[in-house]
Image 1 (cartoon, rainbow, N blue to C red):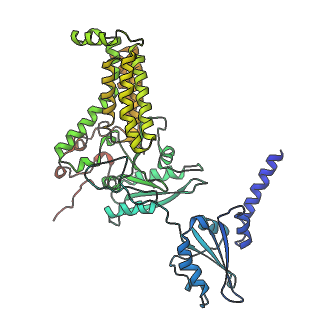
Image 2: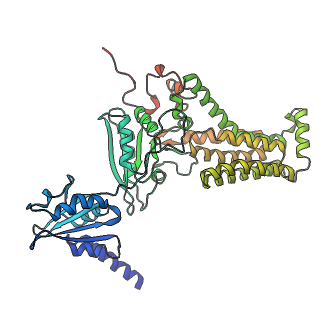
Length: 491
């Protein structure tokens, strides 16, 4: 009871401070036990004083001296607004607004002679330079990528789409983090239903902390228990600009370099920015290769287990003799042999990601070779399985989307269990279950498996192949753009 009473008293105290009048004393009470909170008093004359309040770690101290302190020290004008070397001056009427400006990187100024409160934005420009994308690397094309500063990310997009129809609406999520989320779309092109759906989902978010775009996506996805991502995460401005040009929407989240793109389909996760740079025949070949690699990576090991466990009579005699010789001294069944090796591969992959870059590459190569060779010599795995695990692992790396790669590993393990129980029939049933699940998903209320289901025949020109650009004269119909044509109608 005592603890509850204290909690109620603290809430009432906080509420009273929030509702109090804007004054230096109220701010000092609000900023108690904050070492980086500064209260500075500047004497302009014998009867006139200017009070400065700011959070030292959130502002640019050099600009503070140049544009505020030095001009105010030598100020002889009746209004301090005429002395400050900054065009962005905001009048502050209430205490809540003052705290909001203070924690967003502004300096509060109080002129006691005029009883006037002002706020001057002087945010600390901490941030990294524009670098090359490390998650979606390509040989040709743009090399810039997003950073953690949302304003800079908007600039990178607007440079590629310098049109007034490109809209950017700002929202705030997170009761504690107060994270800025910017919704971008092209007015007159993007379907208004997409925009209204996203706005509705953002307004329904009720959580305290957001530090990454994937956390925002969790609250906006319609199928949170699915292993398949319903928002595409990318740190490439060219991918975002191209997606906006197709009629999609984009969400930029402050303090994270990864943007969210929607609506997406299952097939968008296999597309790479390089597809639209290479010759269309080459791009089509590479895209088909990705689909084949995906199927190979999830079914090769389960087929091995199914054949060696239930359908060994389907294996040609010469191959069967090799398998029998390879497995003659193994203590494990094919399922446990494959399961253990796949888990070891996942451990090596995760370890190589967490290690420093150069060390991680060495660990991945040497770890795979040493463990594979040692497993064969110790009699824990067959040579045939080691080859198949290597092919399967390399094939999984051809998928451009990292989140899809993780889903790929879980699908592989699920099909492995099905194949050990029912053989090839188990793989077939598992594949049917995956297709049914994909067909039931949606991305901001749009079918996840389109343009296959529902069927949009014209969109297949940029589905399994990438057709010639001069033949792709219409935007994908399944995205429901307001402007289907991708060219100007000539008179």
